[in-house]
Length: 163
Image (tube, rainbow, N blue to C red; front, side, top):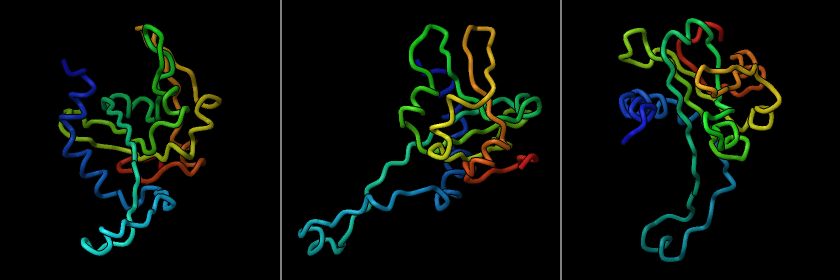
């Protein structure tokens, strides 16, 4: 069975793909991942260098009411039944880019979004942010968009009045 959050990602995949494709040129890329091609690739396939990279993109889609009420960036840091949370994985080095989006009131499109360079804030996630709790015994850290801006972590955004 597919989790509800994955269904949201599947539902909005056309929007997600457009955002990623339109902004890909802004992504921070490690140019040290360039390797010399093999002799066979050079002579038979006509290329001399290979750029090897992996960009891990995390996605969070929120309901419109959270945009109106909070308009912040949140990361789960306490799971209902224990275990690793999203903040644990990010601070351990997972994820490169974060697409954080809010749905329109009618849930048909991604109305507002922000692309975040996780590497710019990775080391500050645990010591910053406001701790908040959910009714289901989970918790998360909330970070203001101004904090992200001051950390130079914002790659791009759309329909975010605070920025």
